[in-house]
Length: 407
Image 1 (cartoon, rainbow, N blue to C red):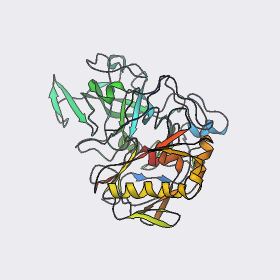
Image 2: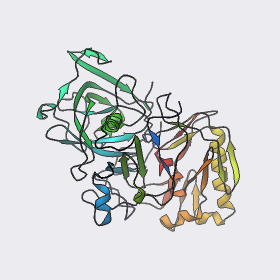
Image 3: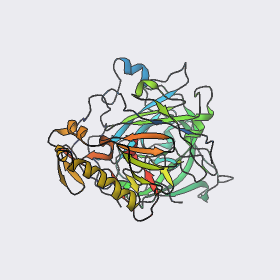
Image 4: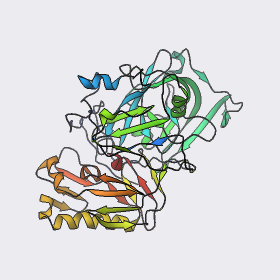
């Protein structure tokens, strides 16, 4: 459904103040579209920050002032975890979880478009090779299989089973279990909670080939059980508010639960109304504009925010209007000092050359958020080539604000 460049070597660290990937190789080609198949006043308030992430480089201990921001903030009851990933090299963003007693680390894609937390377990009959070893259920003294009675799923071999399919064709299946889990790694010192998780015994397509072990769905409340995010919100002794903040940069970012950390942001935090009755985080995009000129209005359909979808998808009309506006701006301004080839631009000046491209204003009612060139264009590998990170989803299609919109 979507394409992305593959890389045989560790992608270079593109930003001296953003986290580098912790995995030695890139992903096999294809971008993801991770929304699962299938009111006002939501439980989870969506933080929309007009800012960049200010984060220390690399995996491991942060240095200087960033170290205190990374660890659990007991006085404010705010948890924090480092996000890894990149639009091109990975096509997703992911975090670490510590699961079980003693804790075992698993890496999971951060997905606002679903609610399942699941990953491969040892003995999986069809699972790929991932960053971290498969979770060993037998090593955890606190793990227990979910019984069939009242599990809300299908009973197989005396255990509660699950199956989850996604729009791009991938699927996972296995058995539910309960255990202690915390976000981040041991350096974060986030308190664990007891939660339901999935133990894969079969994964296919992108789940099989991806580097991250599994998926962490942080979407709205599940139909039959609490998600991991809701279990964190319930832990009032350690989590202050029902707020989850996701701050993404070109490489990595930061997940914060229980509030938000102003030290990560360069601009004000703004809130917009959000609908969750559909099972997704829905907002209303009313218009897009460039330098005060409206490009498209009232043609975006229903809009969901999905960090598990790599690019941003929209209907044919707003897509064409957006491309024409960007390319028209460049024609009127010395080609933005770049050479266009189809959906991509070669920018001889490198990242600094993105400043010649226009900023797109995305209107969510009264709130106007800038969509910067570094977000609606993504870098292909290590070359000075940037391509559109938004796609045409067809006539009168709804809108998916993917990871590329959240940068």
